[in-house]
Amino acid sequence: MRQMARERRAAQGDKDLASRRIGRQLIDSAEYARAETVLFYVDADSEVRTRETIEATWARGKRVAVPYCVGNELRLFPLEDWSELAPGIFGILEPRQALRDVAGKRLDTAELDLIVVPGLAFDRCGGRLGQGKGYYDRLLSDAPSHTAAVGVAFQCQLLPEVPMQPHDVFLDQVITEETVHQGKGRAQRS
Image 1: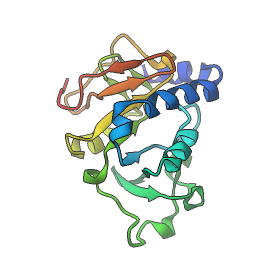
Image 2 (image 1 turned 30 degrees about the vertical axis):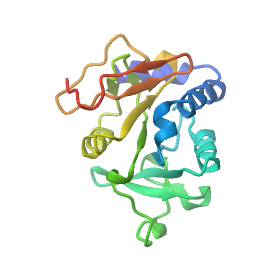
Image 3 (image 1 turned 120 degrees about the vertical axis):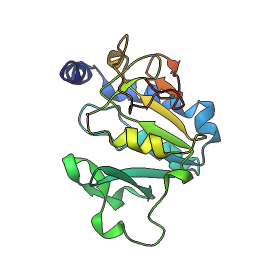
């Protein structure tokens, strides 16, 4: 299923246009309007592009956070400028090593109001298939209940149903370039 999802996502036409539409829908959402601190992933490869939406978030005076990997967990970094990033694990842009321990450059999940979640495949109920490492499932399990979890995906990434394991977390919403699906939310488990 992961391989099929990767192929579908890679074949998505005009990723930039579709990503702009997804970003606009995210920015127009009530969850985004309420958020003061938004965790974004920095897109890589064929993922939904997040960079324009990150810039729009800075322009609106909101705090942007990005994740980085340490062992089996994601840590959170308040991103103020693109120059703070460099290629890290898996070739994904992450905070520069020298900045990670600087005072004020670490966030706790309790400080997040909205988590923008990547994935390979999603369903309309908020089910998500990630890369298989469980990074985001652990992060979402640790986040406070008031923190919205929103998946962003190209329409081609939607499947009728994504198999969910007991540790997997349902998202509150899944946003595509065509529509917004209300998910079961993090209170629901498979």
